[in-house]
Image (cartoon, rainbow, N blue to C red):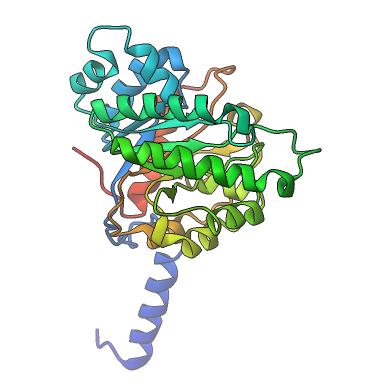
Length: 301
């Protein structure tokens, strides 16, 4: 059959329309994104961290994150958590380190804790301490009254962590002293970014009312770590979060911004889960992996 101009144009329009039906359609071949992704252990309970490592390693993620207190508790066992990580060929990248940033009288103790946890991270080859702000009563909290204390605490804690040889990255968080877009911007524009780097949680940003992609774009030069998370506000068992691609976060835009960047840490997929229903953490992790594959992200074989 002769392919004239009219039939050619119809063919092109039909093919383009069909390919645009879904991001993962057969005709849509996703471009490969130069991105390395790990996974945090928060989808499992802390007592099941060994299972989390086995599952995350089996799915093909490139790295692992747990809490500073979990690392420290495992130090009582031979080989610590490092022995479990080596058994599953999964490197430790980071630890989430909750810190009291609003109480100046607790700063000396918090610095000592940060140094202790950062030293364990370094011992097992990790690179980042994720600094999590302390919880506050958001109904009565006055950020302006605490801003200078938060800034001083971050500067001192993060400098101490840096002196250990570990990168410190602030992680803004809902329900804490650094939650909103304005709070995040004010803090990051005031701290000493030589020591205080940024590790945004894009799901937390969205839940807190921010345009996550815009925040990532604005602070891209100081981002060294990330929690890649989606949020739809529906399921209390996941604090309103959901597997990637099922919520309101513009994940592709964030992936585009992060593609090709060399981070001290890693992009960590994360999904909160309270363990009160019979969801299988591994299945949830696999759903996020499938979405990322549809977006051109590659995994270990």
